[in-house]
Structure formats: C-alpha cells, structure tokens
Amino acid sequence: MSFTPGVELGKANLDVFAETLLALGRRDPNVLAVTSDSRGSGRLAPFAEALPQQIVEVGIAEQNLVGIAAGLASAGKIVYAVSPASFLTARALEQIKNDVCYSDRPVKLVGISAGVSYGALGATHHSTHDLAALRAMENITLVAPADNFESAEAVKAAAAMEHPVYLRFGKRPAHHLHAPEAQFRLGKALTVFKGTDVAFVATGETVYPALMAAKELEEKGVSVRVISMHTVRPLDVDTLMAAAKECRALITVEEHSICGGLGEACAAVLMQAGIHIRFRIVGFPDEYMVTGSQSEIFEHYGICPGGLAETARALLGM
Image (cartoon, rainbow, N blue to C red; front, top):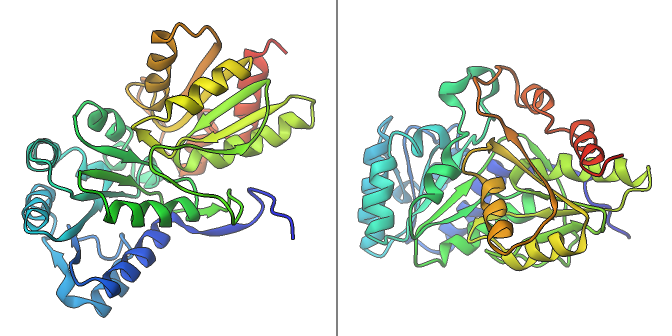
C-alpha cells in the first residue's frame, strides 16, 4: 500500500507526547513529569493515574517548576517539565537560563499549546517569542515536531539527552507526513516532498500547510520541495544549503514571530555562506496580532495553502 503524505489525519502531537511519556515512565521509574497545574491541558491525567509517584505538581508557579526540574535532573532523574509554552518561556526564562542552560541540567522543557494554539485567548497566551528567546541562550536544543511520528521520536530522543532540550507542541490533530520507513534524528531535517523550483522550509504545525501549498503548486507545473526542519537548533545546515543550491527560491514558514525564529536562523546561514537566492520569511509580522482561532490566525497571515502558494508564485515572478 502506497503512502501519501498529508492525507491521513492523526492525533494531536500533544496527545502523542503524553502517550509516549507514559510508555517511557512505565519502563523506567526515573522518568518524572513535573507540571505547573497542567496535568489536564498537558494530557497528563493518565500518567498521574498510572504513575502517581512519578509526577510532581507545583501549581501555577512556572519559576518553581523549572527550578525543581533542574534539581531533580541533577539527582539523576529524567525530567519532563510541562507547562504552557507562553508562560514557561516568559515567566521562567531566568530559571531556564541559569538553572537549566548555564548549569547544564538535562531537563526536558515541554512547551504545550505552543504558538497560537490558544487562539482566541489572545496575545497573553500566545507563544510567538519562545524560539527567539531560547535561541539566544547557549546549550539548549530546540525541537518543534510536525506530526505524530516526529513527536514520539522527539520525546524518546530527549530522554537520552545529557543536555537541555525544549520540545514545542500544539494541540490540534496533525496529519501524518512521513512514510513508515522514515528515520528521525535530532538535528537532521526530513524532506517530505521533493522539487527544484521552490523550497518550503517549515517547522512544527506549519509543515502541513506548506505541503498542501506544494501540491497546489505542483498542479500548476511548479516543482516544490518541502522540508520539515523539526530541530530549529542545531539547524540542519547541510539540508538547508542543498535546498538553496538546488532550488530557485526558498521560503521559511513558522508559527512564530518573524523576529528571531526559524526564518532569521536560515537567513543568517545563507547570507554568511554567500548564497544568493530569492528568499522570504513567513510567520507573524512585527505588529499587534489579530485574535481568533489558530486556523483563522494562520489564514490571516498567509500560513495556509493558498497564502503560501501565492507567496511562492510571487517570489518566482509568476
């Protein structure tokens, strides 16, 4: 049976995170979940019921969350610190910087309901800054999985890491993007669709609309490459450079501010390598954002199949 990426709808990546964490916890009592009143929103209720001795609830206190997680990690525990991304990477930023990154504690920071997953709750609950803030810190891997496969593999890979990692999850159902034989490795992007006219380099939940835009463009005779850059740091420079050399144009796509995220990371690599290519960053502009559901916000800012296809056509001069 052939596999067509993007056709089959799976679970929310957040649900896959929780299921994978529970499986890890059943196998190893050193696996702990530390949460700031997020066992519901983080889908951790089954974990708490099955493994009550392996979950620590700190209440709505994100700074305490990170400090406690760092202390447990320093004692040899495999710690997943779970909290809404908007609060984890804002209220607890100093603790992430000092207790985790500077102290090199292998905490697995888990930002749930990331990007604009909280939709109509507005800017206070959106995490459009997290990748930029954490990219400015040394010693932390940043991962935004695109589908259920990437999510499960990222959670398992994080368990074995000896240094800090940030995992970014949204909460809407994700389409399956990768064939069963796909292999996941942190720091190594996955090519979902192959082409040579324009490349979409996307991360997290923006990979699917990029894929749908690619299929729309293919019907018009445009050859499109779609890359899931699930690891924003360290960036897969080899895959990025190959796309820039083999395609006529390159578009980055992210559920994040255009300031300091995936797009600027890719632009810096290409500029410093002397690569000249038609280039666009698609994300949230430097302005007061509209309020609405995630889908409505994506549509407004062109992070949708039609919007991305139009950006590609304009960049190619079509």
